Length: 191
Image 1: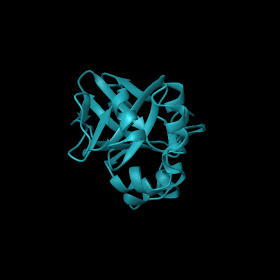
Image 2: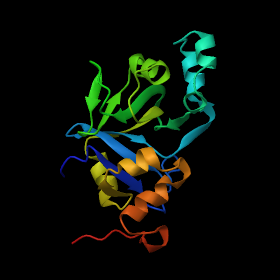
Image 3: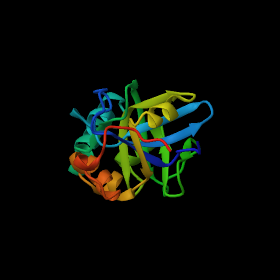
């Protein structure tokens, strides 16, 4: 199988693993040793970006209080079940640091404190998505799950990640393939 890096995995509607039900996952790395991805459509309801800044003591508390509401109240995504306390930022490629990994020519991944400071106090990337945790697959595991009809694969959509409300991203991803939940078959087909 070719690398799925920079593509979406979309959970089939009958996904039985509650951790991944109705998930849209951006694959940020995929090779012979396995795969890594971030869920882009499940937020942590009880956490906001300002909570992360406060918890990590990244800025003067008065400065954090005066951050624009859109930044203070920014959502934190549940990126996956692995290392749930580790933060990752998907962002537009207009921000780069020595620790930035290019996922595609337009989207990069940074997992260091410098990106959090930039998001809060500038200069920030044009578009960001902050997630705690990630999804991981060992060698061959993801390929087997796809073959068993657990996931759809599709091209990455900037619109879905950065311009669609979180609660609409799953249906938007399906719609970009011109399908709906009702039109998907739970049976795998092999030619």
